[in-house]
Image 1 (cartoon, helix red, strand yellow):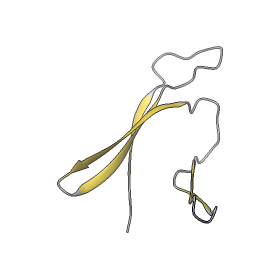
Image 2 (cartoon, rainbow, N blue to C red):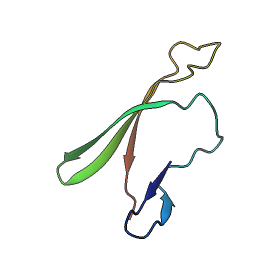
Image 3 (tube, rainbow, N blue to C red):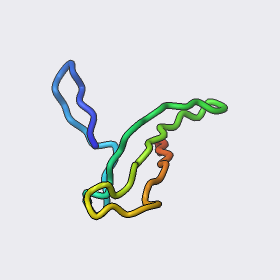
Length: 66
């Protein structure tokens, strides 16, 4: 997943999968700030490409490493 700087068009990655897969199907994101630490929570629905695989979804917590 990438971000785009709309002022200059620069593209930078903030999330990279070790092994790209169709099973990664993000459906929602939310920022949450707790005690000054901001995290991005990403809901991944899981494998929805037939044949579907139950219980493959996950909630990812993404934080910034200095």
